Length: 403
Picture (cartoon, rainbow, N blue to C red):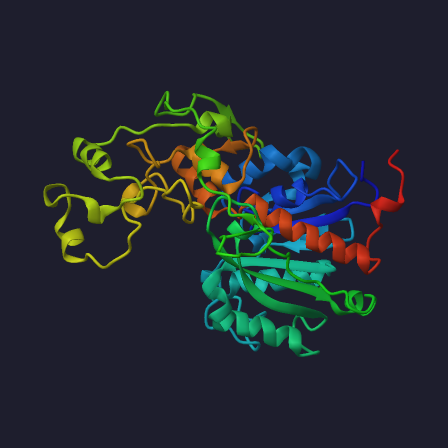
């Protein structure tokens, strides 16, 4: 067991815990326990925070999981030295920012999330921080500001240096989902200075690829068939069990394990006819005129994902918060005449059968769609682990005998 020398994590804007789950699932070679331990988490949405607490509260301590706005959270509750901060402000929190008002303009709500993120990083001084965001974040003024504040020695984050940011595809790391996310890695300069020559904080190498003729010696992308092959064909109910939980002291529906989320829907007759008319791999453009809409008929060149079936020979499209609505994307089951279920979406995101969920069906769907895929997070965890061990910032468990 790795306890005394665990690598400590604080997860900001944690959601239900996709990043934490990935870091906790990582295993150092030759060890059966994770080298990472979470010592604090912040999430403003009560249902998502409750899900986080239901899964990680026993080890983190529910008193260290803050369900509320980040500006009300005191980093001083974390007594340990923090090695890693995970998470980053949602993109809508970055607007019209500049150094002059970043920490001073308390009245501008647009600045709150970024200002508070900087406050926490400066207070806890992690050795590494990891930001995950939408792919377009790297083209934004917000990312330009982040770079400026780290490149300037007198900047608000001047004691950190960034690894050149990248957009990573979760499918390249064994996740059966083509989900592209911006990842930003940063390390404290004094930690970086101790690194052996040639060692830096870098991105994980892909383990999977879309095979091409004479392609690379990597595994092929995982397809959604790997998920649906293990899924019961029949959905047995449309409603969650009548159960209550209160991991953070406030009652909510739950907690439900992932396998309890195989919930059906009761579609309207027209919707059912549409589902039946769409062939394997098809979409709204395959509907006969009498089953289509005027908008769909007028805009034949738009996205091909609306009312689309997932393809068994490919990864899933990005799982979003309304995956249970086929009119929102390619969310029809590959062969059955229904949308994918909450359970199937959670599996595509990498959550296991025993992960516990708190909240209503709608709240749980939002948590699933907003999560970082667990497999992508685990790949990042491996890189962070190897870097911190390599620079001597944490103990190397391979040189110790487990008690």
